[in-house]
Image (spheres, rainbow, N blue to C red):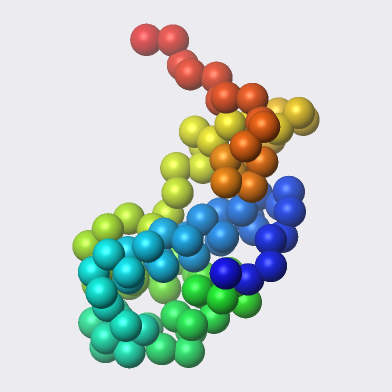
Length: 104
């Protein structure tokens, strides 16, 4: 995967999408070419998402999710919080404190 972009929440979400995409493609043994045909997303765009070179737009994520049949967008509002109270991808800052869970 591409470079880690640190604390920026958007970057963390993009990285989580990239990881989920790579995992789904591996689990389904689907190549970028096959996914491009199934999703109508350019193969090079898929490669750039996987490499962390671009932040995919919503249409791209929705098209990829539809072709793969699995969600790629993370539930980032449930992520742990960093020391400033901002959501933080557990894969990037695992020492963060757990997110508060709403009372029933």
